[in-house]
Image 1 (tube, one colour):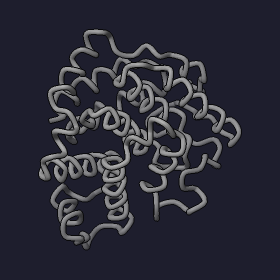
Image 2 (cartoon, helix red, strand yellow):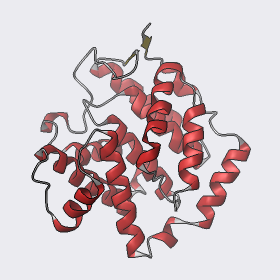
Image 3 (cartoon, helix red, strand yellow):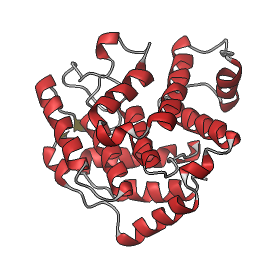
Image 4 (tube, helix red, strand yellow):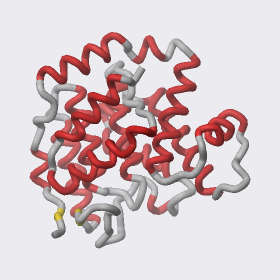
Length: 251
């Protein structure tokens, strides 16, 4: 049984309960981004955490030690593919970008989303595919029966609706999770959609002086299950549970 793309999901703005939002805001207010970035160690460690977990989600074989060596010393692992090093360096560049420019996502979400994708996928996709809508039709999602939408016109229409609806959501946490879930669901780009969606989610949080979502590799399976569940059923439940667990350990 296959599951086709449903535009009506973009109209669902009901995500977290009031109790869940209170929990998340309490954490965010206790550890604001402006406080955290005063500490160079947090800046460095948060970047490593984001990069390593994100690369592991994509099947990158660099260990955490390899990743640190590459990011801090520029030393590649000799037995690894060059593309894996490119992935890691791109993720670091993208994370650094939102640390300094997250505010732009509030006024120019589509342009910033394209910028995030271009940074993340530079050297991994052709230049013509950076920041632009997917050209490949009939793509398959590993581990899922979900069939994403195809067609440049249709994809551009849906991402415009996505950002228009996102701007109607008042709570930052609702807005950030809505964007993350639906950007991954739309599969707007040729590749790198989940990476871009996680970066976009964190940019929204950072733009509101909230700490980003950083989670350890042991939570990757929970993240993937939440993502696949949304692809097939449009249910935020697993995403909500994941966010609560991940944000509870964000600092």
